[in-house]
Length: 421
Image (tube, rainbow, N blue to C red; front, side, top):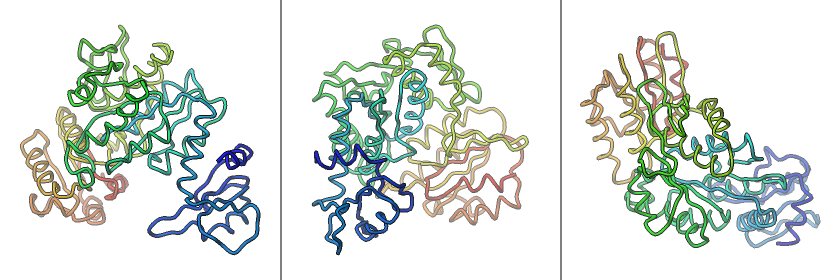
């Protein structure tokens, strides 16, 4: 590994995709069920790779080809070696909902005063985490590493790679139940981050209002935030208007976020920023300037129709939180909801309960996209896929009011924004 690390330090970076490979980068030939990166080794060299790491023999004598037993494991070990060599402070975060938004908020606060690197997009798996670590520079003061998982053991693996100094779990929710089995399974799997931090006496940031979170930390002393008076970072939350505001340390922070759930994400960023020396004024400015994008609680206005686009992901917990917040909106309220995936045996029950909740709520009208809803809703409000929904809304105006668009990523509900009127 020392020889490979020496080569890495002289390289321009790391790539696992020849389509985006830049000259001077190391290319790791990774393989999966539907691809074999070893087959692209020579193509990577032709595009200017400094070296290529493969785990299958190929017919070449080029000394830029480095043969290892497992390319993925070598990538992960290289990332840990780099993280260790730099000694950069690493903050890891995971959770069922809000990981990426919270990561972006934390980055927005910290980068004002600290040289900060954060996970790009949602590259939060066994490949994305190493790539984030390998993007750290000597001048990087803090790295924010998002960790995702849908099976037990994955967070433990990612923590062993990143070796975080501090961490945060946003929440435990009904996400990836197909892989975790139950909510209890989610708690156990996500808490693998806590297990690592406890074993290394790392710093834990925790939502004091979340009983499930606090139950995992009975023998630990986390840095807490919340609306509970005992929280170290205590805030009052105002969600009466379209966006939320925090009052903390006698300062009002008016965000451009909607939903109480995002208040906790912003408060976590504030608490972490203050812990690492960011001033109240700087944290306030960063949180007030942050504008949601990439289909996450994104605000869009079309004439007199106020749209909240939250179509990056959906599970029963995030769907419930979004709808409860949306139901408080004044005026006419319409929702377009997409099917929730990866629920396994829980799918039918969760979708039926969602329909029943909406029907009993103050939401005036709702449309449903995805086969999981078909048995529970009327045919005139149901679409099996996004194409059917687009045809309907292209010729049927929604009118004035507030519209929530939320569903799992695979249903691409953001396409509706172009045709809704």
